Image 1 (cartoon, helix red, strand yellow):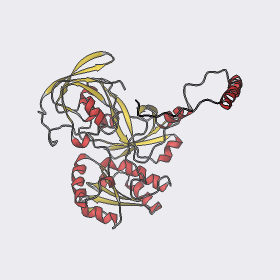
Image 2 (cartoon, one colour; image 1 turned 90 degrees about the vertical axis):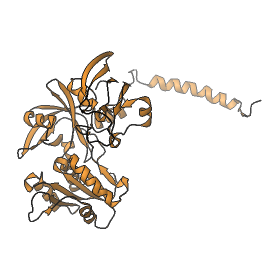
Image 3 (cartoon, one colour; image 1 turned 60 degrees about the horizontal axis):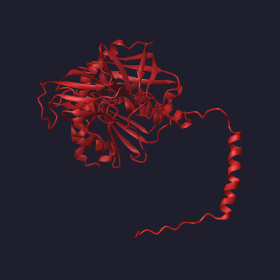
Image 4 (cartoon, helix red, strand yellow; image 1 turned 135 degrees about the vertical axis):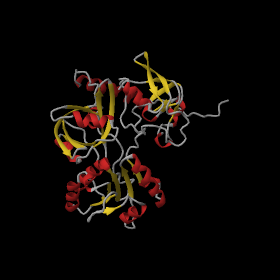
Length: 396
């Protein structure tokens, strides 16, 4: 006998009378409706596409040079997606036979997007395949294809302290410049103390703009730290735990960090001394290193070469792959249009199923969901091969 007792209410006379009246009312409403088919695209879908476009086709309106090693590209387009200060665009490139993407932080005020403009500041990186090509080939009047604004390196009042300590190095200044503009323009409401590390004064990007913003609002303070020269008006040395503590001024702070890999290594050790809660430390994308040789726990031979079997569009293509490069780099070098955005394991856009083989993924870059780990999915942008692989790749 069942342990469950169900109480069923019988349909009464009044229920039947109500139903009898409801049918003609519905028929009348249907007769008054439009004969046109209901649009398959809802207003909410159109808004989502407007705010989060997969692709944006932009034009280079202006090129501003910063010495010999960096340029700012002013990009224009119609109905540009809005962005939060600190986000980036993933730029799509075709260099020779290679098809690739690179993420670059937006350096303009979020207000620019409503005027149909973005700004990307790109610095020539040592052995930088993409940055070299961009600086040598992007000209005013040219066309650029990008993603919509991506990334989570922005101020969130429910998570972050009202006082943010920004730690920048080199071209890592770009998201902080956008934040400074946003604070000045009243778009963001927090205090920013920026410790900007450079080798020499001549290496500082946007010094005039940053100093001008600091004069226009008391919510932005700029501290320039030079490592290779001592000059009046600049601090000398490196961004240390002591300097970060002084910048906090004895009050709760969130720390945002963006710069080259060497700076991340040094500053992360300094931050450990402060014993800050992890939630108060924000990193811009950790890029996967060019080689896994120095990565802790790497079990492979970085000089080895393997074969990558790519399953795409119902076909299998075999391409060469070096142990010292990520799986994504091997795909791009072979001209295979593989999806990618952040190149640091964060966004999951390059998610692909590893059918056969094994890879090494650094712990600090492995941001896969547990379900994906169990199902055999990897992020090729931060996965290094340990032998021959078979990979299912979805098209971009």
